[in-house]
Image (cartoon, rainbow, N blue to C red; front, side):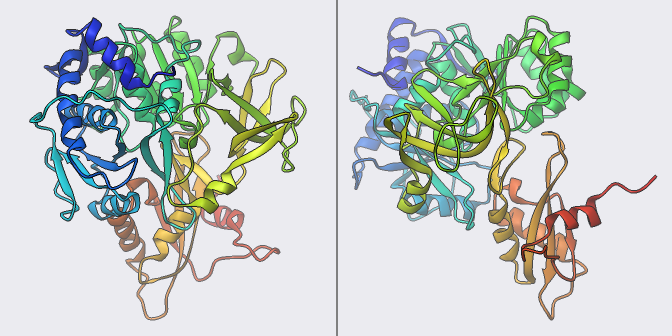
Length: 497
């Protein structure tokens, strides 16, 4: 029978109970302790009237061993975990709780959503013996939606287990010490947490976040971190300002955007034994669906770092708009089939139907997720990322829909129209720039600052444009659409020498 990560975790707790499961500074939680305390939390959840077959529990805790315990307890109870980012506005998190229909909040101190029940991580109930099944829902991760309404991706237990099962590119093991840097609301945290716990390794939590490159380098060295999962933007920053971060690290998995070849070349020259993996995958494919282990030789012959091949238990197809396979070397949209594909979008059948499709490919009917990403398959079978087919971009590793940012800007009472462009080419310098048209009767002198403050107060910080310009009107191209190219040329072009 297919195992879930909870089944695997139980086995580690039985065979190696005293091994460190989670560390933060001097605080060490063993596998036995994690299993025991998460079981008590699971029992407390089971005592709550679920209201539905797959009830949702919001997880609202700071980055700590308790957060890991809370997540494990929720999954053991057979509930769905809705992880919340403590750094997001409380009103935004409360909106996600309502959207998900969460029954309880698992917390140690959070004060939001007063109408919901509380389950505290205080270990005051008996162990819960039942374990989840592979095809039940494990997580809800909310991603940016084009209307401004976030979409809840229904991730399954089998997808999480399959995510960490393939060790061809990333050789996981019981001596692994993985830094847990991503927000738990970001699906990248799934690999950080379960890449360690499913193999008997240790989740190593920083003392605080964010950290400067120098502080992060010290943390990695002092805590003997062996594996880092970081965004392309943060990797570029570390490669430039703190390359010593990677000294002694065994593996880094970089993703979330196009990986800069030059930075990879420099770090691999400095650390020739370092395993560098480019990981690719939308939330809808359970964090990561493709991996590519970079070799020294290919950095001199490729313009892009490939995203590689599909994880075991999955297939990828490069298709035309008519869903026909393209020839090798031709550009097409990437479609994913297999264990890692999510169930769909919570309460959104139309969007689910549009992106999760039943397609006949090479004579066989398959359920596929259409990623919206354009790729090219190389003669050796590896895939190279080309770009997006729609308005989604990656900012600091987070997927953002430009229309959603425009929606957030237009919420401000003084904004009549808004559009957003992306400035910068590299992952580290990529940023959002907003252009606003003022409503009659409002003063535009302080509008840019006011709008940015509004977005920061009501939306995740990644939605806030780095710069905002107030314009008399948004220019249109000959097709009647906003001419973003003209805005970039007029406002963002380099000054002449």
